[in-house]
Image (cartoon, rainbow, N blue to C red; front, side, top):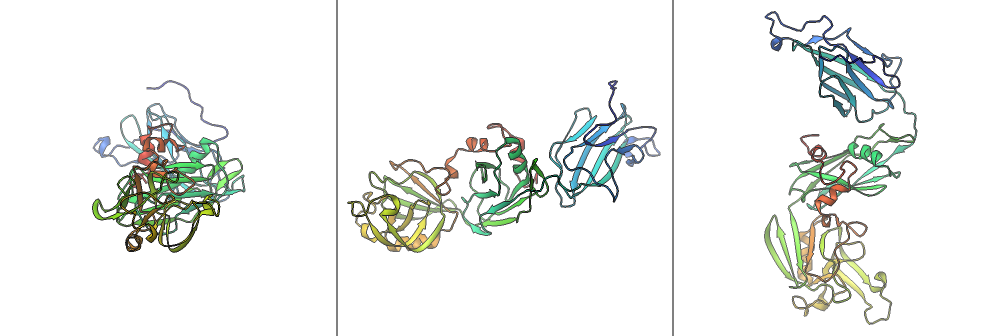
Length: 417
């Protein structure tokens, strides 16, 4: 039994007040509260904000539910708008108070369902609807989700490009909570802030083969800061194909292709020679070009030097933006399988390059091991996302204070969504 006083009116916030008990019995005719129909708490709930068709609620104010009767408690509160967006909230352990922890959207209609219980265990229910008004801010945060709809390899990250920078951690958390990623089969994954305007999402491990991944933004109308609210964003659905991973062993001069965990082909290759070593690590296929002209001047090698080149290359599978490919190199067939003589690319015979070209897709994985080169950078030169350990990846999220935040990891699973 609580005896501390409470204030019935909270100034400056949207307030739902529930008086529990108050002479209302919820028991059935046999007196057993567990068999009772929920009583209607009408007349015992007051809403301090304006309601009805003429007036609206300020979307910048928080939502609060308070139990005014010491003999009763709140057992559950759900609030969501007509688009299905839920308002996150916290319920006090003693059931005395519930308050929202995520912002309301502007120009939205909400339904709040409150479950209560009196001292006899009789359940009470109340449903309230209200509409939020126009936002006080006019600038909209656009979100462009990527990649384009289609089928990709299991290494393809999801990207979100923002139309305006978001630097504050709390504001970034609002953005992240509004960006929903679900997959079938389910995965555990997290967003990573690459910079103030770009986020990447990846699972802890690779996507499952033949999965469906759906991405959407629930930020429309949501307040990010005093000058910025979420805008509309086009949702995205992609699928994954088989798991294809090409492992290039630079020391053994071999590239081995695995499909769904089984070895399907081993190809003799040449990789980067001393001074031009191929980068180690996991790279994601960025695209495929049947023909590409490769010139040394584009990578900083002066024309006319002993290392300069100008070559027409076939069956080029791109894995970095700086010009690293897996491609046909008929001029180095004598070295393939025996020595590393390239300027950083993975070279193979024309026939093998044609086979590789036809059996990989954008989003598939090329993993280089045993090279004397540096490790592929995580961002800026393609997708090196998988070279970031999972614990460190989680730290790139505004929703995690460090490696531990299981509730946020769970939130990204389809079951939670």
